Length: 112
Length: 412
Image (cartoon, rainbow over all chains, first blue to last red; front, side, top):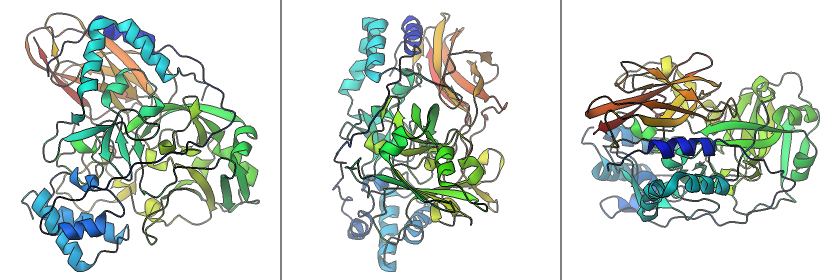
């Protein structure tokens, strides 16, 4: 996208924005009582999708994985291993292999 | 440390819009209204992210992960002023299990371990029983800008928006520790919040500071952010603020302070968040055998905020550049602009100093002499005379990136 920069507006905006106001005095806190959204999105179906759906979504939503870059098999293996050893995800060896295969198939680089 | 003032974000926005005129107003707000996704323009993986307004107490944010939430501040926010509005302050949680409802009457902050007297402080004790301070400080995730790593690495795929600046209001950690009375032999202080791992065996999120750092009079327990209580997702009711250090230390929903006489061995302090112990924490992707050390302080950074990649500028006509900078764990000494891809540099004018650890605005005029593709670069040098490097920092986990930023434009 090409867009022109407006120097006058830019300078004017800078001047107006750097003008400070007054800090409010906080005397008491109030519970926000909010609902934090969750996600029920599943991984796209394919070989190993059951394993990744069953083992990974308890701790984080699928977009955590889907937004990752394409990685080598070795890198995906390290990621899955970190989830098991560091973060104590209870993943069986068979499922861990199926998850790595799924990730290499869907988000691999072709490198081992 | 000094007192700081901040303007309510709504007022700031109205002032800007009324001052900038119709042309500029349309320029800023029409893409914003129409846009439901944002393209972060990176190769090697999914480049677009949804824009979300679904999170409580949060405005338009880039959705990096639904749960536990990773919400990124859209970059255009940084052009609007040095203080990030609370509703667009970035959000990052390690574990999904944290409360959405906190009873302010029964909430207690415990201070325990190697102290003469265990404390159980109510919010009233903290708001009314201890001296208050204000500190402006940038909260930046150690993994800010990880999405630009070459080659790409796993982790939260933040663009440049896992950083936000606020005036934090609270009490000195030192005053709280003094009230408990730290025993001789104390070496570290460990901090925990109300967030819990989903899997019971998983390591609870905890971080520690040395006892001297904890007692430096700047590390604080914040209950206020830009004059308001903290949004829940930013750590209501209390969060640790460690000025100049990475956001991972800024423990949210802080309810437990433990003074230790042995080194903290928990995963997050002893194992996680590691970088190579090399200049600028940088290594070659093929390199091995280097020592790893914890991420600690922020490094100097600067950004152009009013000109984006792909923008067109009139050749031969003066144009304004402006942006933000921060020194890391000290102030900003200077910000320089290059319009020739780093061959030569011109100084810029710094805006008001609104706090050593906060964002500082800079601005300058420049003229691109002839038509064609041009590369703008901006470089911050901090008050310790540490400048941003011109080579691409890379490490296996994508932490502490502070390479000089480059903006490609066309002089037309």
